[in-house]
Length: 116
Length: 114
Image 1: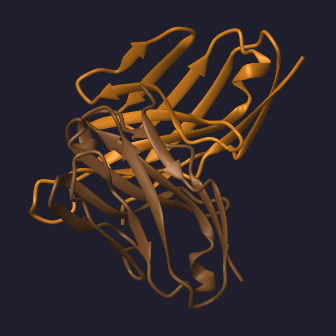
Image 2: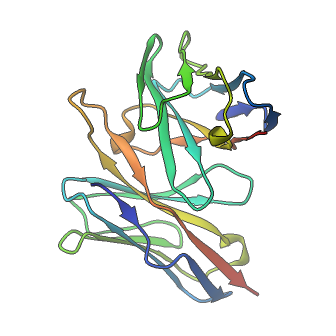
């Protein structure tokens, strides 16, 4: 079955370090991937996305890397700040049924803890 | 813009009671979604809508109903609350299909069934 998983449930880093959050996906037909950040008591907030025709995309302090050969996705956060402390989710798209509707399949999340 | 607004933020129900979780968006998005998030789990799709008057089941629709009479509103109805429905519920929206662009989420409704 389809699944999106994370290697590390909790990642602890020092302020100023670079953080890397990893994600494995199982559906080789997925062609869109997305990272969300969820702070306590809030809804998921879009960080960055990438399509399967790319292997790297950069945003402000964040970079997403896609390795389709091993079905692996990673989120890199440069100069991690205390405000980056949150749960980070990856998701991939999936096309169930014959309606053409594409849904997102979410991983279980990695908690990032940033110490001052 | 307020984005996606969910009400109430918290609610406690007794088994067998019913309630409606409200969701409204002001971004003129065609697609709207309801998810539930259980502790330590990823978001699971309950229902979705591709436009006013059109809804369809997601992965975990049992025990829920939805309607979409306007572009802005997408309420989720629990008819006979059960303890298994204790969860955090998120509403989301997107202009086009979720499979190729980000969804915008509300801040959730925390629901406990006792």
